[in-house]
Length: 76
Image 1 (tube, rainbow, N blue to C red):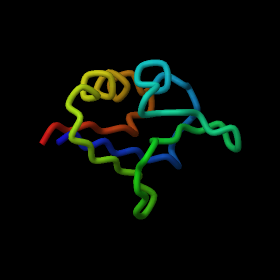
Image 2: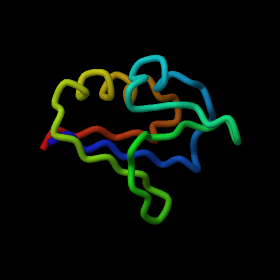
Image 3: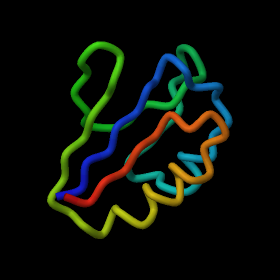
């Protein structure tokens, strides 16, 4: 299972995550911050659990490219 976590309130809107993993991330037209698609929110952390291991590499690259390091990706 791939677990992706996003701290959305710390997002600076750089768009790297959307460019590297467009099937998981999208920019909000409201506030210019990223949205982790199909995620559940708890205390400011947005989490997506997926059985699709094909998304791991793209999301891991997005996490590494994030200048404020607010994305974590784990393969559990």
